[in-house]
Amino acid sequence: MPLVASKDSDIVFQSYGRCCNNPIFFVDFYDRFMGCSDAIRDQFRDTDMKQQRHLLRNGIMQLVLYARGMSDAKLKALGESHNRHGYNIRPEWYTQWVDALITTLRDHDPQFDLNVEAAWRRAIAPGVELIRSAY
Image: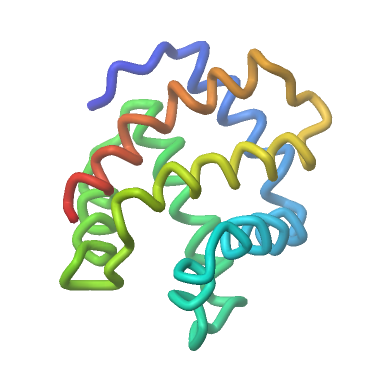
């Protein structure tokens, strides 16, 4: 269980709620993330993006729930599916993933500010690291 302040997880939960009901949020995220590099874009070349956006919605929620004290089982499973034997998501791409997420949140959450950004970064860091460490 991560050591995330309940205030941070509350801020993140509310911020995500303001963003995730807008399907364009997930489209914008992938436009940003895939725009980071040709290698990342190539990773999604044959991907059903509608399904991928659904998976992203759930994956971010798992990060938020983990920050709120839920089990790490689903994040461990994500780590296994994304490791070198699965989707081969390179460990260094997670920094770009978080940065793309923060930029997309900034654009879609009308209450986004430096405090919300810091809460997001602190809250999801343990879960992202758990996934990355499975590589």
